Length: 403
Ligand SMILES: *Cc1c(COP(=O)(O)O)cnc(C)c1O
Image (tube, rainbow, N blue to C red; front, side):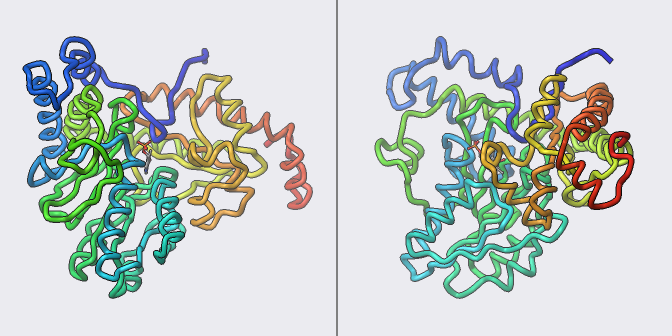
């Protein structure tokens, strides 16, 4: 098969869709006003932001557009949610936070920061499929718990968390519930008016809007505290001239993302399952990371014995396949992924992991290509790998050059 380019890293970022690009272009060129200006050019920009706020609110099933606060992305939304909730909790003597050991670093490092500032954090453990049990949440809640933060969909292994059940528990105990839903947009149906979610983080570039724009949904009545001080933008909760073009693009992109969720999930899950089955049957000593049930429709995460993830990514890149090993934030560091470690992998298997995440741009031809390239790449890397040869010796695998 001839070389092609296959982008299989949609959990890292996505391209900007035509609809998002077309929506934003006028706000970069003709409608470049500052939304705070009172003349027409400024008011046009303000209208663009207002329209996007309505689109986001509608896509989330939120009660009103004023529940949406635009941010610079998912990381800022996570920081805003958890730091605000903790600060308000502390005013009432509540200095306990509950989160999980599989969160994105935007949540984990925020919690770590708060630990240094007098908060106590409970990290709930995911099971071997990468799922957080609602029972664990219930047992961990204390009188002094300020906030619970559990992600909706994991970015590495695609595990879909029971956020409805967790939300019910938090609401019944009077504790604020935040969810990092950055990987969930276009994957799960939102109905925030009826879901027991108090705060929810989004990031535009994970669903075909540009990088550098995101949002935090905050249920009305829940106080938040600004992290960025300055002008009165975002009702005084997030100073700084709005990223008008990015916000407008996000409004268009989220509308598209939520329109065909079921169709998308069916299409992606079919490709995902063919990829998983093909890899596990074609490549010896491979395993799937995370469960098959409650798995995001585009996520494949596998580990290969005797393989170094980083080398695999580079070898695949030469063949035109863009993928990742663990999370993008974890690569470049020598530590194995905290998520794979949390679900019980040893360091060798965690480092020998490959994440392929499919999105709207992928086709069945891409799957064929990956299934052709990957087995031969693994075989070649193993034939050169002292680690693989050691494993073969230790485990009595004789035919290691063949596999
Ligand atoms: C990408 C991602 C983030 C960070 O979003 P940015 O917009 O890149 O800051 C946070 N949480 C999860 C689960 C993510 O996948």
